[in-house]
Each structure stands twice: as C-alpha cells, then as structure tokens.
Length: 245
Ligand code: G4P
Image (spheres, rainbow, N blue to C red):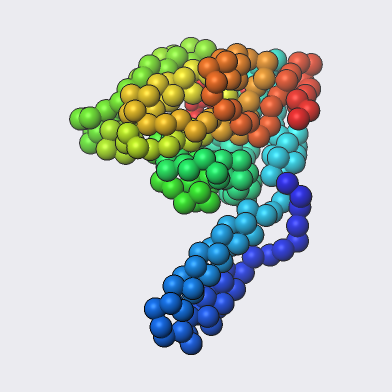
C-alpha cells in the first residue's frame, strides 16, 4: 500500500451528508441523499484504510524491538505479546481489512490472548464482531460449545479451546486472525470450530508467520487462504530473515 499524508477528519462526511440532507423534502430526493450517504461511507472506508505502510511498520517493529531467543522463537513482547502497541495494531487491522474486505466477512474468530488485539482492530475496520476461543473453562460458558484440542509444540501442552455456539452461526463468513502462525495447531483447532458451526471460512490472517515451521503449508495445502503480514524464513545465527514478497 502506498503511504499518504491525507489525515481523515471524521466530521467531513457528516457535514457533507447534513448539507445534502437539509434541502431535500421529497422522498425521491431523500433516496438520492441516502445513496449519496452510502457513497460517502464507502469513501470514508477507503480513506480510513489509506494509511501508512503497515507491513513496513510491522517489519520495522520486529527488527527494532524483537529478540531472537533461539533458532525457533522470536520474542515480541514489546509490541504484541505483552505490551501492545495500539497504533501498530491499528495499522495491522487496516491491512487485514484491505486484504479481506471483499469476502463478505461477518465475524472474526481468534484465540486468547495475543490474537485478540490484532483481531479487534480488524473487527473495528471491517465492522464485524470479534469472537475469541477460550483456552480455559469459563464459569458462565458451559452449554452449546464448539470445542477442539490444540497441542502446542512450543509450550508442550494441550488445551481444549471452546467457543459458544451462540456467537458462531451457520450463516457466518469467518476470518480467523492470530498473532503467530507456527506449527498451525491453533489455526487447525479454529478451522475445526468453524466447520462444527457450519460457517464459511474466508481465510486465516496472521501478524507473523514462521515460514520455516509447518503451519502455513499445512493450511495452504488444504486450499485455505492464508495471509501473513510478515513471514520469517529464518531466525538462525540470531538474524531475522524475512521472506521477500
Ligand atoms: P501453533 O499454534 O502455530 O502450532 O503454534 P505453537 O503451538 O508452536 O505455539 C503456541 C503458542 O506459542 C502460541 O501462543 C503462539 O502464538 C506462540 N508462539 C509460537 N511461536 C512463537 C514465537 O516464535 N514467538 C512468540 N512470541 N510466540 C510464539 P499462545 O500459547 O496462544 O500464547 P498467547 O496467545 O496467550 O500469548
């Protein structure tokens, strides 16, 4: 995405809509002003999505604030997994929206905890609710659950994740969003839950994909659309190497 200096003022379109609405009294003219309002809303979304180069900003944050802990693990606690950078999350939300805006998404599905921030921002721009799968049993969430077992190779533990059937419906078009795609176990569990709900899967969006682990291939081989904003091909020798897109 090209960078631009346009700063959006949310009052512009309100003022224009009010200006055009005032003089119209007949139903026909009101209809025209409603069409015009829709047109303005579309422009507003376009302007909102115009912004900084999100992928560049993300890669910059990874290079400047990320720490390679081993050949397999990248620590990004400074902006994603512990402390969260809201502005960066906002840009990430815009980028996911740009990539999936024509898919008719009705819901975003993520998994607690670090998937929630980027998923929220995408939900904000796509204008849809965000549902997060729980890793622990909830006191109030007991009936009508979709569940899946998720094994973490990194943490060497298995969790049963769950989502209430109240919030994932058969007609939903679902975008799965997560912070990391590593071995793909969390994504596999979430895809399974989308299937249990008889909803349609639009794709999987990841902030960071570790391209040297199996998750991405596993999903793509199943014909699932996978969009990862930054793909890391190697963490060897303490060096972060991105895949050139
Ligand atoms: P998978 O779901 O793709 O199979 O990943 P895996 O089991 O290997 O990883 C489990 C957890 O570890 C996930 O977080 C995942 O986001 C995280 N993770 C995997 N690789 C890395 C990495 O290189 N760096 C960081 N920072 N995290 C990594 P989680 O347990 O769901 O944690 P959270 O969402 O509660 O923070």
